[in-house]
Amino acid sequence: MEVSEYSPQRHSLLDAIHRFNTATTIMDETIMVPSMLQDITPAKEEQEEPTKSKDLLGKNNLYDSYLLLKSLSNDMKWGVQHENGKKEGPCPDKEAPGEETGDLVDQFQHHLRGLLSVLTKLTKKANLLTNCYKKEVETGNSNARPFSSNHYY
Image (cartoon, rainbow, N blue to C red; front, side, top):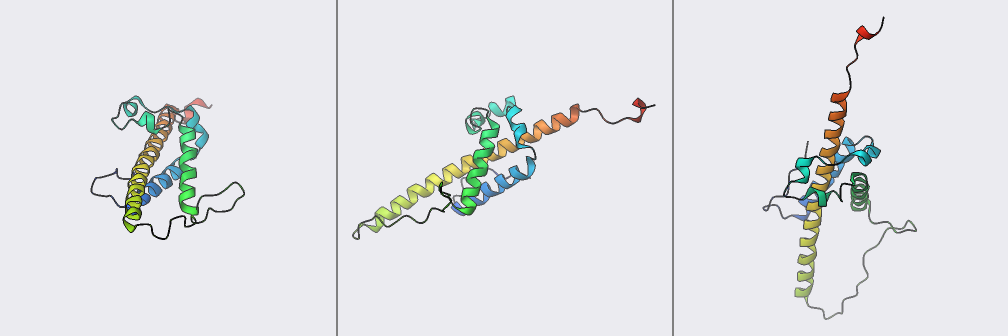
């Protein structure tokens, strides 16, 4: 199961959050031994993709990418944690009482576009990382010799 890639028709923040959450959940369920990621480099065909997977996967450091994605996923689900363990609350109202609503709409739309862009990139990153891990595990399993009773007397 893989999360569908970003399509131009789906500009919903909730859809982007759902795709990212699904991709990181699949990544977390697939990657049983995260430390294996330290020895894996993305396949050559993934490095040549137009999506620049090398950039998405943080210069081939899959383990750090895994930790980053897991941390961001936890932050989205449970809130951002400060060093002292308290959740970050809502921002205090710093706007002047006479602030124009149009400015707030522009700010909201700007940040929404930014969130959609970042979530799309992170979703692609989680999918690429999951695929790299799957390929490595499949390659490792195909190199293992099957058990044969002929070797034992």
